[in-house]
Length: 504
Image: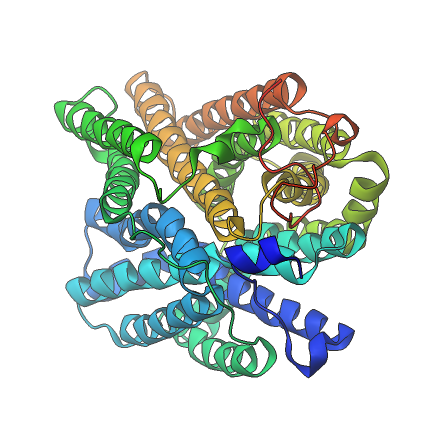
């Protein structure tokens, strides 16, 4: 290891002398932890009707079963990622696992609305701590480009396919046993993951707090993100133009602006602003936000369309989305990595985004009496192939140029754009769908026709968001061949690319 690298900290290593087998087993352990977090973000959706009946939630208060998880998750990812850089990524990962697993137990035994919502909030904290550092740990364990592409492909499969797998798992557990088991299932997974992580991943040394931790910066960015996510998810109840939304939104923007001023002036920033100088890093995170806004809205509203219009049960909904997970798995676990290695991440990403947009346009034409094979299966195939190509490419681009001292931050930024994009898309598309449905009902259309019209509008807007992502990819991203080679006096890189090069 170079003297420069030693000065800025080391990433997690694997035991047994860093053997090839141990590294890949450690990767699978990290991905199991990520899968548990991702599953929990969607597995609850299918069980919501059962939770509502059992605990007596109203329709409006039921949303807090989801929101209580999203708010701390989206708000704490950047801080959690940076803490991993400063202290220990392995340590932050293990603490997150402990918090998430313990709060899953509390959620499973919950017999009141208040206890379940509190447990979900704690789950969000644990989920942020666990997931924020995983990608940073992976890219430090696999510095060689081809191995790294394969490892990121496996990670991307888990992150992308986990949403649709969660729908299936939620349907199976809810119908076979009861909703409590969607939380109890995390206990053996979390415990086994922690034990294996302790055995396979050695202690890593963070870069330290240096001249002091940026406590004020951490408070500003965490407050801004949590307030932003809260504002977004509550637009379903208050509307976009309400005083509540405008007031809290303005507060989130003000905190964000104060954070940027703070980071530009402090000697030891929580987030070095140079990370945003790279067109590929900034562009990839913006593209992911736009794509996920359309994609996550489709998963949620598509599930409601299958349930409320087509009459699908919980298990049938999970099976309907199964092709998405299968295709993402087939592509992410090898094919996408080979395409990225041969043609570059940008060249692989753009066709994937086009397929996702086509999938949203296809489902936007689904009628009241849709047939699965002709009206829905083509959408699932397009989503599966498109996401399978896009997510590994985005992860590669978003981590490009990350130094060992910043890889936790870059990893947290990737997850933040994913979660904030998902929250924004879900809130916006759900609000617009509801408004359109109410308008159609007022004109005399049947409930099924009105619901379908609302979902169709949301899917069309989701397609527009993905088309915007394509425009950003074409205009902003640079082909990898055009990225300058790192100079000898720059920090050692995780990916071998210039650390956050200046925008051209």
